Every structure is written in structure tokens, then in C-alpha cells.
Length: 122
Image (cartoon, rainbow, N blue to C red; front, side, top):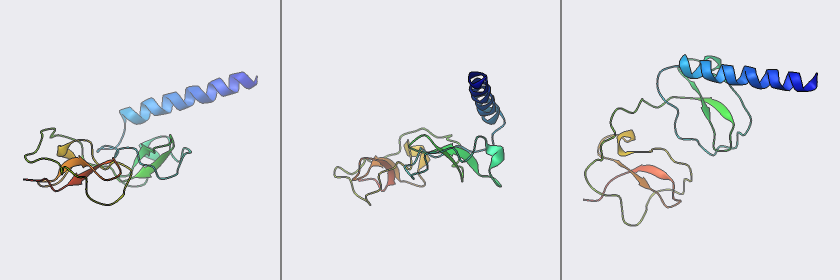
């Protein structure tokens, strides 16, 4: 009886994850962040208020957060990333490609090794 309940719960979780992906709100989740939330605060976008989405954290949990725009521009922007990483010691990525950054900024490694939008060198 106990195994059947566990299997049923896992099956419901899998189905809710699939439905959430199919009927999710517009936008995309930001890269997983290390915010110390390791438990599941939500299972689908429908559980999040307004335009917020249910997104993963760096340690496998989920939480409701503002979506980032859907990536439509994957081109590499002109300029190059600073040879010596600059910026704050933020150890979670805020971009994946140059197209995630506004204006002329590029997606470069910061001092902690995470990716962040950075003013390019000439």
C-alpha cells in the first residue's frame, strides 16, 4: 500500500510538470539561481501570481519569480569580454548568451566565474 501511494504521488508530479510546460505563462525562467530554496515552492506556473513563473533554483527546488523575455536573438555582439573579469562577486549567472543582455552589453564571466551582462572592451 505504501509503495502504491509513493508511485501515485510521483506520477501526479510528473503529469503536473508536463502540463505546466505545455500551458506555462509566456517568457522563460532565468538561469537557476543559488538562493537557498531547495524545496518545491510551486509545481507549475499556474500556482504563481500574475505573470510570475515557477522556476528551478540551483539546488533543485522551485520558486515563483519574474520571467525573463524569450530569447529571440542568439547572435554574438561586437566587442570582447574583459580579459580580467570585473564586477561584483555574484556567483549565480544572470545570462547565457549575449542576446540575453540589453544594449551593447555582452554575457561574460564575472570575478566569481558566473555569467553576467558586462560592458564589452573595444
